[in-house]
Image (tube, rainbow, N blue to C red; front, side, top):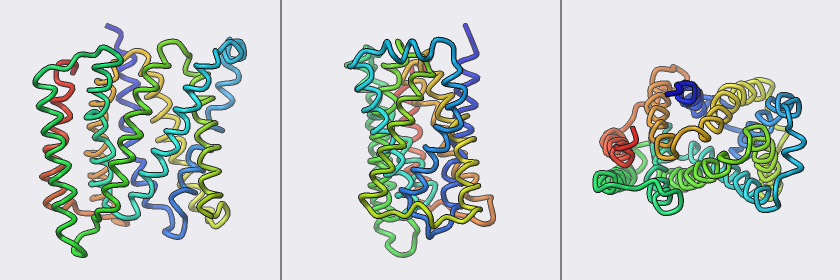
Length: 295
């Protein structure tokens, strides 16, 4: 068995675990849409030289069918929505709750992959989906009932859940397209489309592009390198070799790593609430069982 895709997947998961920490370290005056736009723009600019110098890139790009191109444009828009929803959720809820909920997309990925990618579900997988849904209810409603005593809010948790839905669609689309399209062409179209979509979102919601300090730009640029290039790009590369369900369950590390980082870093120091810990436990266990036979 070729271990390279799994090594790349591991590196990508560790890298994306830093994303939430980078985001909450940016100045509060910077809008979530602006953070999302610059993150994806910087990621695109970082991979652009390697992409255009890739062998046969231009020929493959020209040879893409209209359907393939439009599907990747759609995936880019979904990626933009994922960033917009998830980054915004971090303004209203804790890093732990946000990352756990946004990472719950295997609950969506597994059933869709069952019907469209022929990755069959067992009774254990179905039980895992139910367990994860129970965990989401505990986490969201439990923290919501605590009211102002917790950083978690219903609005933030809902945004994170919607961001997770978008992430699930993004992974499914990537898994489908990476079977026939190289990583160079894929990230070129998807990242470019996502950056353009976020640019227009910023214009529509009147989010400023220019109120960032040099420190803010540095943090987002670092996030683009770590979580963008070594995170999303390597993750997309591994999708061609690894089942969608396995790729999804591997992201279990992200909420664990992000929660730990948010707790130990002194300028963040967010302690997960009781409901976040209990609900998160059921969600993560359910996600594991959802993909049990593939792990």
